[in-house]
Image 1 (cartoon, chains in turn yellow, green):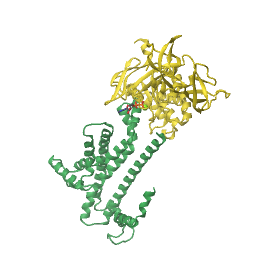
Image 2 (image 1 turned 60 degrees about the vertical axis):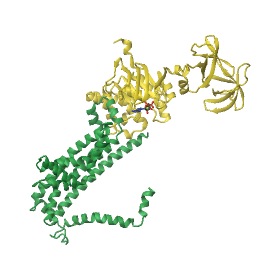
Image 3 (image 1 turned 90 degrees about the horizontal axis):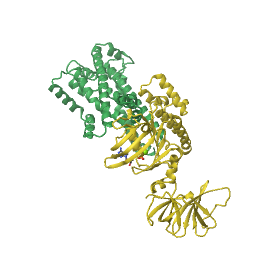
Image 4 (image 1 turned 135 degrees about the vertical axis):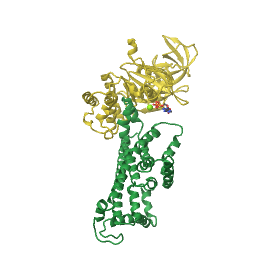
Length: 362
Length: 278
Ligand SMILES: Nc1ncnc2c1ncn2[C@@H]1O[C@H](COP(=O)(O)OP(=O)(O)O)[C@@H](O)[C@H]1O
Ligand SMILES: [Mg+2]
């Protein structure tokens, strides 16, 4: 087998899954390299769990193939696949202690006692549960249960770890702490993580790469920066971060950037443009934090009136009514001075750097 | 809560309750009380004595009672073990087997015997056994008991299994357990309160069955209920009361244990799902 094949941990080729007439997943293709922290991101019901269950073997694909290190998985039952799952609700065995839970996979694999004990100790150390080894799951807090589930899934040394929204049941502070821990754990163990979440912040903070899903299809795959800065379509742009969408018309080209004319006649230079005939209509994306507000508008610049100002601590969010109809969301960082503070009703100029706006493919 | 306690305020609640309790338990109390009677009479109190218990174990009829008790206990044990095993398999099929044609019908057929009048089952079983030429005796009693115990064992086991989320089996499978290992290490321990409750229920049902047993026992083989019935036909002696008291004691012991096992298991389950708070 070719070496480059083997460095791909999970390969998903045109995988589809139907439940009766309902299409839960359609022609999904993904290539997840070894040792990567890969995230499936999408709203509830978009098919993330379904994709994980297909990889784990709990469901059979309706079409397509799933390969693990080049090996076709079709027909292999879950207990013969070298992947482990951290379930959304952990599914810790209630009749076993924490260490018995962690030992379970090792016992089923037929390891000898001393090796099991040694591994269990190491795993409990890894997730800081040594002191709670003899507790039952119902005697643990949510965060502790989460770590026990993690230790149980990692103990048998899977090649790929599947995590189904493992942090969603935790409160905010704990969730943020666990993000870092999980990321570190992935680095330390070198196991390929396929992580599922509906929380875009979580995805951006943890992932090497992200696949954004909606309605059973993968919309875009890329690292956090690509997905955020260069979203392919409206769904991705909207799901990750905040967005202004403006209908615009291609007016020409300059310095390798496309010039788009906004409905009010103003011209902006956009990056990420696909070549298109002059006059063609597109949607352009303007991130709120990429727009600057200035107190004294320059001639020929965009101008408008602040219609709403919401103070959010580190920054302030404005809604600005632009002359000529449209309304834009703007987010400004709150610096030390009060210079950048505007109030409702203030007349402001908007500064948009060349290339800050992106053209969407559709 | 308020609505539950409100029932107390209905007129006649107390007297109705007391009347029911009296009718239910007064005869039992009389039987238990007179089993300690020193005199031969079943109506006149002659002081406290254990003579009738002594009589049960060493008296003239003791050999008959002992063999009947032995039959009852061994049949009840074997019937409980066999029916519980079959009921466990049936519950797994019904609850975890997914959808299959005739599932609702299967469920009805499994549990309906509980609602069929026992005398009908008894007559039918007798006719069936003679039709196939089965020799009536210990074996025929055992077969009949296994069969009519199955629905009683099935209900608590199926109820318990329904309460176990399939996540645990998937987790076990994810951790390299095959079907047998999933059953042994995960499903069976989680089902155990239901299985035990089913076993104890089957044991009790078998132990105190009279009607069916009386029809199909053949001659010469007795269980405790049929032996007691036989003895009573020749006149009630206080030793019957002693024997009945003993039987009552064993029954209530089993029912209590069954109840405690059941509620213990449920409590564990509830606190678990409560903690997860999903
Ligand atoms: N076993 C099933 N039978 C029928 N529909 C299912 C089944 N499993 C999932 N679905 C449907 O597939 C869709 C995707 O589900 P899921 O993968 O769980 O979404 P997510 O994990 O992204 O929230 C949902 O609409 C769900 O109702
Ligand atoms: Mg899900």
